[in-house]
Image 1: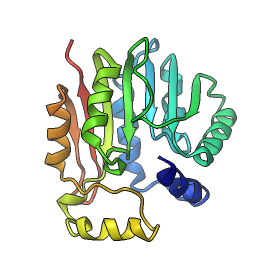
Image 2 (image 1 turned 90 degrees about the vertical axis):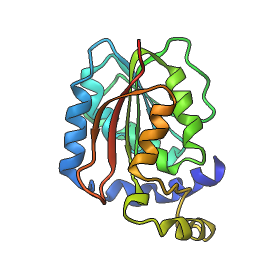
Image 3 (image 1 turned 60 degrees about the vertical axis):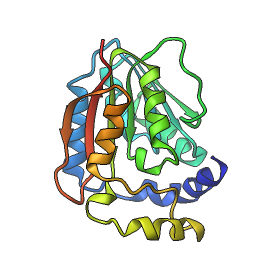
Amino acid sequence: MAETSKFWDKTAEKYARLPITHEDDYLTKLKVTQSYLQPEMRLLECGCGTGGTAIAHAPHVAHIQAIDFSENMLEKARLRAREAGASNIAFECADITLIPKPKVPYDMVLAMSVLHLLKDPDAVIVKIYEMLAPGGYFVSSTACLGDSMGYFKLLAPIGRAVGLLPILKVMSTEDVTAKIEASGFEIAHRWKPGADRALFLVARKPQ
């Protein structure tokens, strides 16, 4: 965690200034996600970054626990939430691989641009499944570099070794879908607007 946190802490200032890539895609993902939200829901967002997604969903739910392992990212997220008046978000510096199972299961877990940045995405997907209430939803958006840039399997370790890249898993659309289904989820919504675009999935834990 320390090595990865250091990478994102260094990147936070630049990251916060970057425009949203494929903003139309992002807005569609927000809209689809919000179609599943209810006022009484409790959400967990893993890898919340500077807080934009949590803030967008906050008016539609009871509470959001938003975690990230970059304290610099979280500082910007807390400021943005205060400016937006989003008082039902709790930001915490934490690692999804280490946090305990909640006493009360979540109704939805979000992992937006997260799975491809994990050392062991399979284990995290299983953990998310266990953290959800029956009928709960797992919403993810994942860069599937294996669909169009398989050569990254060779470049990613080099980029990480010289400090230019974080952990980067090169997976295909089918890889990610299979991992989520293998953990017990049912796919409720699947959308990938192009070969070079992220795979957006809404998966449901059976009742």
